[in-house]
Every structure is written in C-alpha cells, then in structure tokens.
Image (tube, rainbow, N blue to C red):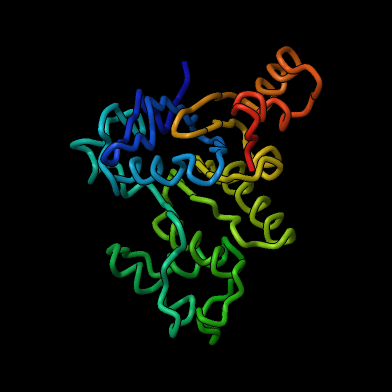
Length: 249
C-alpha cells in the first residue's frame, strides 16, 4: 500500500472560461522527490497554490498526509514549507534578520531555528550582508531556509532553479537530495527543465495544458518510451510525442 503525502483526485480549476487544471490526479509518496514537469503556463503554479490553500479548487479533492485539507488546514499546514514564485524578503535587512522576522510571525519558540535553517542551506549566520546584495543563488537558498524554519515534513517548491547558473543548479540539486535522503523530507518540485528533473526526481508527473498526461518513476517512463516511441529513443522524444510535438521546455 502506497503512503501518499499528497494525493489529488480529479482536481480542476477554472478561471472564467479558462480551464487551468482539468481532473488532475496526483500522487506524491512519503520521503520521495516528485518532479512536476511542464512548460510555462501548464498549470504548475496553480496546482501548488491549490495544495497550499492560496486558491480554491473548482472541483475535485485534495488530501495531504492522507487527510482532506478542507477543515484540517490548521492541523496540516504547519507541517508544510513552500516557495511559490519569487520568495519575498526585506532588501534592507540581512538574511538572519529576515528569517528572525518570519520566525516570530510563525510563533517559533526554538531560539536556534534560524541558525539551524541557515546552516542547512549553507548560508552564514549573523553576517552583515544585506539581502539586496545577495546573488540569485543565495536568495533561493534563503527562500528554502525560510521554508525549512519550522522543520516541515513536506516541501513544495515552485521552479526553485529559475535564474540559477549551472553550478547553482547542481548545488541546489545536491542539497534537495540530502534533504530527502538524510532528513526524510518529501519534496514536490516544479520545473520546465527535463534534464534537471531527470537527475533529481524519484517520480515524475508531466503536466500539459492543465492535464496530467503521465505519472510514474523515471524507470517506468523510460520503459514506456522504449515501447511506444519510434524514430527517437530519448525521454525528450517521448515527452514531445505525448505533448503533441511540443516537448517540455
């Protein structure tokens, strides 16, 4: 029996006459990294907002830690850390000062929470550098540190590699793997970069125009590719086929 930390059933979101998500049934297993792949505008951010209660579904069901989020928000959300779109911090404060503010807002009692979160992401504690002077990679790390402040069991990260150089992407990839393997965190990460998700994720879901076309382990998708694809034998060829020639990126 699977132990799903996130499970949606026929999740649908409609804005006016536009269907952004259509009957999405997602399954994220405990302790694994799930890569949500899709082109820009596929509905990835909308899906994550629905999981976090930042938007309401038009139809369908959402379960987190095997409980419906409706009526259990106060019980479930303290166990979730997230970055949706660009993380927002005060530019005229240091990383430590920013996290101390968020710690107070969360009502955290642990005096070491900020120091430990910064240590996990490899940022200095009590340094003088203002957030405005941070590199993009440091800003992303601080965003993840903020998501980790309260030691959540589940991380939801929306395109965290956006704007990073290849070195920064590789460092973030290694960091997320450590969180999953060594600390047992369950991670849902979205991206439009196939090569990065294939190096990071245990399971992959392909979202295209609001529809979840495929879901499974990297091995399962590779096997499907070998059986179904002619004239090309890479995963990119397979993804291009099932998205009507569009591919992922």
